[in-house]
Image 1 (cartoon, helix red, strand yellow):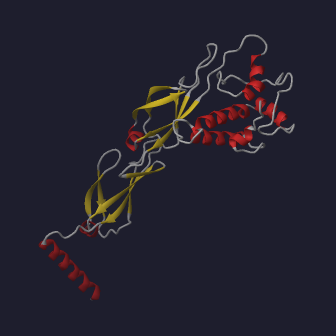
Image 2 (spheres, helix red, strand yellow; image 1 turned 180 degrees about the vertical axis):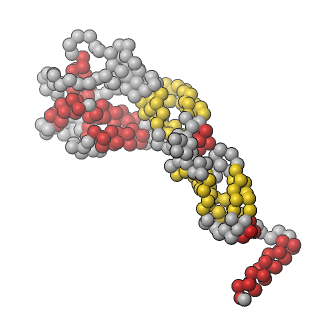
Image 3 (cartoon, rainbow, N blue to C red; image 1 turned 30 degrees about the vertical axis):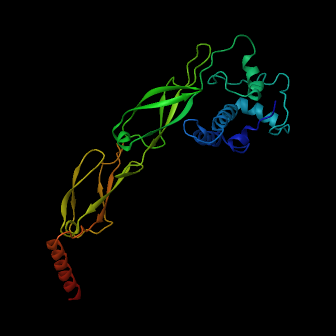
Length: 296
């Protein structure tokens, strides 16, 4: 059996804080998740990242592991756990499911959790996954079906999407993680939300950005135009003399929330092409009038 350096697997330093270890774990779990990653060996790396986090997230297990590591063991070195390793350490196995760990992990912590009579019920491990939804669904909420691979099997789940959810936020599905042992509850499924790019709108926090194509005469004279928002069309009054790049705010028309976001409309003046002789004459007359005004 070979020694494993769990800090090296997570890419953190031995003196890293619990928050730094958790952040590194989440980043690598997303990177190597079998439902997301196309890298060769991603599933094995995903299992290794999970195992390293299980060893380091609990202070008692981490302390015991650090004591072993301080003896000079290096990755790949032949290793046998010391006798009575883990006695009196108070290891927490309340959220540790059955199986899926290496012989190294089981040799350190498996024997300790199995000592002293019948095995205790243990809650199943949580599962991390990712769901990508349209911007319209993120705005209004709804239901999405996802396919989740669990080992070699695939199962379909229907997920309720709350209105106003933002990219990076998580949805917890209770009891949809790894099964527990000896009658204990299953873990949860933690879904990280991603929002697909939209052809019309750009999301920035709870604010929404939209570019409005405007005819020159509407920009020069002012107009009332129809503008799409995620919640439906609204009328927007364009002030006379508006230029390209001018930004206008539609308050409360962004993503819903305790404090709803706004929609920002950026004006982009677009001159339609002259497709008829009459239209060309109008452009020529316009050019003549404005040139004479500029030279006056």
